[in-house]
Image (tube, rainbow, N blue to C red):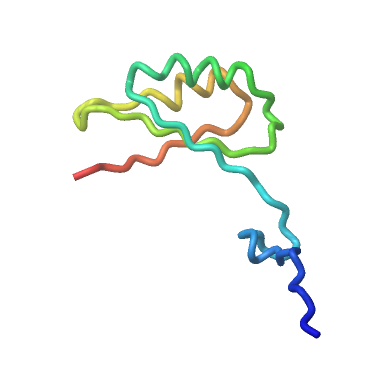
Length: 87
């Protein structure tokens, strides 16, 4: 007799590291005109929302982003910038 495999998956199968709970990461992309929507989102979210947000803004390579300064005034979450250039 063949037993059916368990439908339960291991934490590793879910991408979870043993002993570390799942931590949702939300990615949002916007052009420079989407900054106001990002600002309103930060206003509406509690600091302890339990998720990380990655906001990607499209800018001209010669334009310096002000996203960190503008968003930091709208949340108590830590706001950091990582500049990446597309070629």
